[in-house]
Image (cartoon, rainbow, N blue to C red; front, side):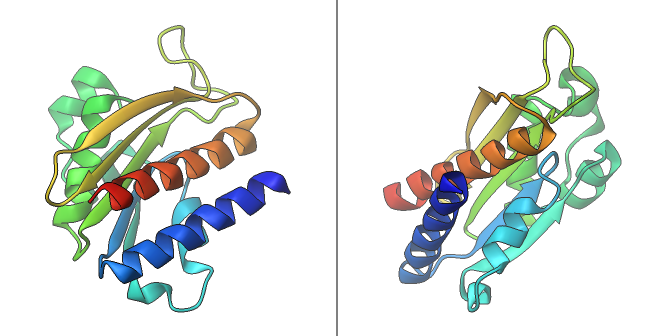
Length: 165
């Protein structure tokens, strides 16, 4: 419950800041499967600050919806810094938003490797007037726990970007 409260608090704070600054948000999600978009749109009036959510679970969707290059996917894999930067850039290009986040990871229980174990999640955040910043995190727990932690981290990163803009 405490995690849910902190997630909702971060979401509400983000909503307030985006509204005050008259900014719109776009999200590009892979392993979180739309969880961040749902969380953002759970509150009334979210259309004042939430522009769009792209759930690009497959590589093909990442390419078609966000413009991620096939070469980048082949060279780095979907769970990589290069891919999340292309995802966040594509989210801004395909929307009216000024702020965006992208998320791509391995939530499990399968799909991990020695190089990218289950719980590996890459994020990129971007304000339209600044370069993208990307970070990799390693979360513990089952599939639900990894995805929940990824949504929380995405929100915290968005707060940092919006507060710094």
